[in-house]
Length: 127
View 1 (cartoon, one colour):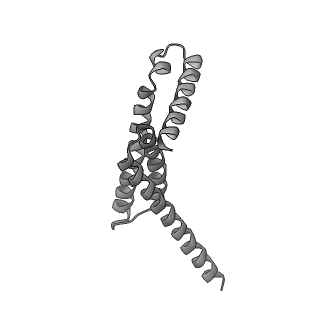
View 2 (spheres, rainbow, N blue to C red):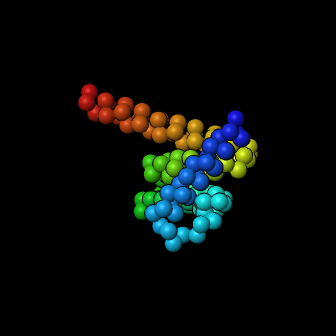
View 3 (cartoon, rainbow, N blue to C red):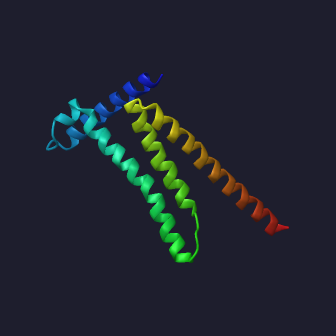
């Protein structure tokens, strides 16, 4: 299953590379034959998104003068975790797949609990 998903990702990346080369002919043609170049960029982008969650949390906490986890933290977690999961599947790395897969479940669950809490608070305000 993982090998099939990895191969599918690689095909999609090759197609993406060919599209990029058609739009930007000055790019190196090695992008089409070596999808690893694009996947490394995607992996770093995912790591960047994932790291942004801490920067957002730090700036928000500094602004409020106490430790706070803003909703944006969870959205950056989901964005970065999703991209890193895609990268891990392409690499066929079961350790990262398990870690990011579980993490995504936790981030989504936290957003669900936040929305539920906000909904309950809004209903309480109406009463």
